[in-house]
Image (cartoon, rainbow, N blue to C red):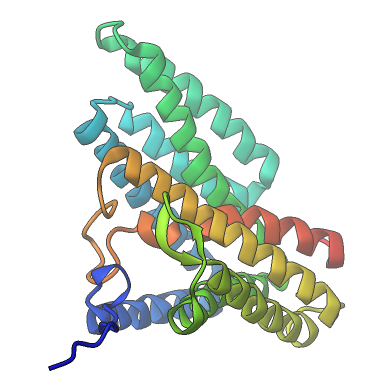
Amino acid sequence: MAQTDQQPRKPRGGRNLPAAIGVGVGLGAVVAASLFVVKAVFVAVVAAAVAVGVWELTSRLAERKDVRVPQVPLLVGGVGMVVTGYFEGGQWAAAILAVTGLAMMVARMSAPPENYLRDITAGVFTAFYVPFLATFVALMLAAEDGAWRILLFLVVTICSDTGAYAVGYKFGRNKLAPTISPGKTREGLAGGIGLSMIAGALLMQYLIDDGTWWQGLVLGGCAAVTATLGDLAESMIKRDLGIKDMGTLLPGHGGIMDRLDSLLPTAPVVWLLLAVFVGS
């Protein structure tokens, strides 16, 4: 009996698809409810996600590389960046980033000096990568139409991942970065950029005051690129650590950081383009 060369495709990353969909819908409901009811509640949701993300990343660094980042000043400073960014602005968040770095330098002095520079460098990287980039979400929210800006930001980022998955699954043939993320294809990247640009054009035209469709095309295209780069960057970190996921908190998704990977680097880009196009 002849054998066929085609094998049924497995779910991406071996995920539990029903669990992933259920968790995704649940997270979406929490975000929507907090975003359009009380802005401060959404800030609390972002701050909580930042705290968990920081804990996941520093815990994996300790487990896999024996990197001992001072967690307490990092967690306090990370939450402070997000909250202060919303209520007081970006300059205060930047100041807290600097103070957080200094606090980690002092806190690490209680341990032996071996690997001091390595541990502090990892701490400063984590402070920038997770809470500081997340602060731009708070800055977007602080605008008068902040809820709609956040919705735009979330939708274009999700469309980037969705378009890349759908097109890549159906038509993907040429690997985008085989040594980093073998599942990503150039065709998928094109699909993600296309869907994100369409979503950006529609939402910018109809949701954002003084926004136009062509601005949405630019914003959506840039968001898709940064979302993909963010995903690849976290894949690099996980490969360096020798792990598949940053955590197990979200069934079918991994950890919080596995959901923030594309959102974090996209936030400052969307904030900047919105500030240029329609003001901050």
